[in-house]
Image (cartoon, rainbow, N blue to C red):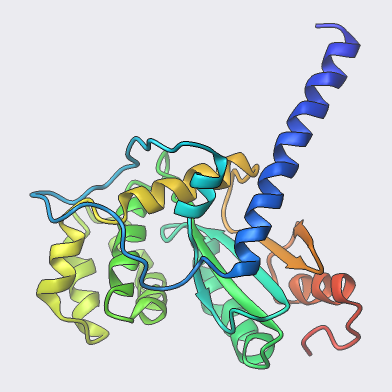
Length: 247
């Protein structure tokens, strides 16, 4: 391939990435990523533990299906996005240390909404896809964020299990869910399409590892190199012109 062809290919790839960032940003602004959106088929005999084939008409359909789960005010001017994996130790550290700081400051003040997208790294984390589906099932009973935390707090236990479904069912009852309703959801293919779409969206946006953190503000979407609270706070300050950065 000539240098001219290389440059043209690079421009085309960059244009494609910008398109997905634009589409993704538009969805984040209007708040499609909400708890409790029901998709997927009815109860089947076995739990879906891996991505499924999707039949989507266009990129907009992918973005619409790949809704995240939102914490905070949908009208918040700043969105902090995480593409995460429930079996990823780094995501566990983020969920148990950084997210609470965001929630207690900028989310609580209404400045920021936090949106979680599933990106299970199935090649190295065999239980992560089912864990993502389990979390989505918990949203049916308005217990998503409680269950989100429980999964990460118990990560070292279920991550090494050959069959983690029973642990996921135990955690559901631990946070006060109806066990039979949760089990019916888990032992089906419900939300397999949503988690798969999350994965495809992340891949199209260049996500390759977790946690991947992005910030959207003033029409700009920025991927951060750091995932600590100060890095996020600094990015928000730079993108909004705020002097307090959430402190």
